[in-house]
Structures are given as structure tokens and as C-alpha cells.
Amino acid sequence: MAGARAFKECRKIGGSQIRNLLNAKDFFLFDCDGVIWHGEKAITGAPKVVSSLIKHGKNVFFVTNNCTRPRENYVNKFYRLGFTDVMQEQIFSSSYCSALYLRDVAKVQGKVFVIGGEGVRNELLEAGIPFVGDEDAPDGTIFNCALASDVKAVLVGHDDKFTFLKLAKASCYLRDPNCLFLATDVDPWHPLQDGRILPGSGCLTAALEVATGRKAMVIGKPSPFMFECISSQFRVDPAQCLMVGDRLETDMLFGANCGLDTMLTLTGISQMKTAQEYRDSDHSTNHNFVPDYVVDTIADFLPAFED
Image 1 (cartoon, rainbow, N blue to C red):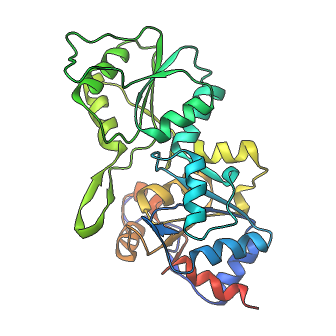
Image 2 (image 1 turned 90 degrees about the horizontal axis):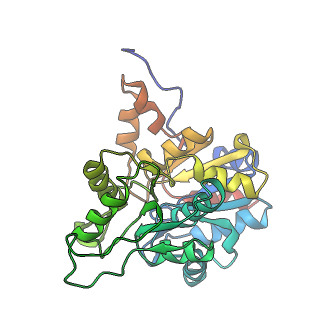
């Protein structure tokens, strides 16, 4: 409706406001890239923030659409960057949650055709789910390659070895209407150094959606399934949660879809101007991208622990 406005304030907070918010919440969900680290460098103060939250009895989880690593590798990265208190059970990646969905929800009986890398494959292996994907000869084509039997699902994630043949084979499997079509996430791109970008899983998913005329079920943010994974393993009250992220269209929407309060940190992709534009938009769908709170960095939490 013209003139409608979001209820979320998109409010920049600091000092005692942050302290009161931290006292009011028991569960903290953090995105990783752009929130607690940039590549192989921790954001200044982030390790101390995470450690302080845990020492104060808060429940801390990490929800990431980055499907390129298995969870055990994430633990190693956390430790390497100074996050020495983080355990594997606190990490919920889109690859791990995809494996949980296939095993525990879909209860897939058959093979999964994978477009994806080590993170996806290792999590499927850990979950005991059989999969196929990279068995073709270098000169193979859709005209002469073998198609695996008993493929009951296609899972698309980030794949830096993506080929036209993978796209074609996945399209063939998805001609069966009973074959599940899943995507780890639909992130369009990721920032690199020097202004370059890396196309995300969403690009590969979009290509397959066009080829098949089908829509993928998305496992990662902004789908609420990641939160359902956390809730199934821990007793989580959405009203006691704060979702902290750097991407309005992913992290803030995820929070809105799950009924969580949200916080935008300005150390990543989205900035205050865009958040305010969404807040002031006449299109109600844009209001789900608006954060409740905004901070320059999660290091702004640190003074709250100094009392």
C-alpha cells in the first residue's frame, strides 16, 4: 500500500543500548564472511566478542551460506583466526544443513547428484548419503556420457569446476518430477580483493532453473530451515535470539523469516543507505530486508563486557 512503512527502526546503537540488548538476548546467530572475518583475517575485536559472549553464558551459533568447507575445516579456520572457544556443534553451514535435510527430512532413498565442492561432498559422506557427480572423462559430452541410475535428488552448491556437462546431466535427472531439486543457497556473488567478485551458488541454481522450468528448494539463508536445524538440536526461543549479519537480502531476511531480531554490521556488503531505502520503501516486501539495529562493527559490543 502506498505510504506504508516498516515497523523496524534500522536504528544505529551503541554504548548502553548495546549493553541492554546483550543482556536481553540469550542466543546470538552470526554470519561469518563480512561479520567476523574477511577471508583469512578476523575483523578487529571479533574473537574477543565471541569469547566474551560465551564466557557470559550466551549461546553462540554461526550460520553461513558458504558451502565450500565441511564443518571440521571451519573449526580449524576459527581456531587459526583466534576464535579458540568455537566448537563444531556451533557451526551451521548450508552444506551441513543440506545433508541434514536429505537424511532426516526428505529421507532420500537413492543417490544425490552433486554440483558442488569438498564442503558439500564431505557433509553428504558424513551423513551417509550416497552421491555422484565428478565421474566424467574430460572429453565427455551429454551425447555419450553415462547417466547414473537411481538419482533421487540434485543438490547445487558453489562449484568452481562447474561445466556445461554437469548442467546438462542435472537437467536430465530433474526431468523426473520425483527427483528433488535443492540448492545450498542462492547467494548471487561474493566480494574479492581489488573490486573483483566471485559468482555464487545462486548463479548455478538459476541456470538449472531455466533449463528445467523448476524452482529449487533453498536450504541456506534466507530460508528458515537453517534455524530449524539449530532449534532441533538446541532449545532455542526465537524471542531470545539476535541475528547478526552483513547482507540485507540474506541475513536480515533470514531473521525476518524466522521471527528473530536482526542487526546489520557495516563491515561487509550492505550499508546504512541501502537499509534506510528499504525502510522508507512503499513496497512492503522490502521491509523484510530492514534490520532492527545497526552497528559499525561487532567490536562495538566490547565496552558492554568491561563492567
